[in-house]
Length: 63
Image (spheres, rainbow, N blue to C red):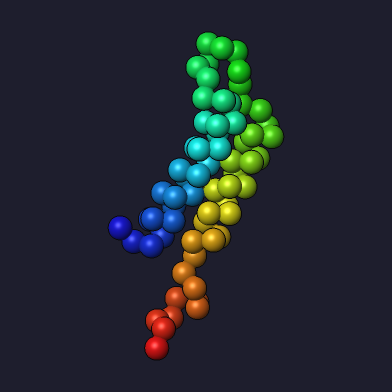
């Protein structure tokens, strides 16, 4: 898997984790819904993971 593919998978998983824990892991029948704040936190977590897992040094190999 390429670096970009791995970064994408990690970012999506981070966003899904925030959504899961933001709703308390409850079933939809419980009446708990995803709020806009949780959606923003999930997007922020995904962007943070995407940014923090970027290759260092502009993609140049270390000599």
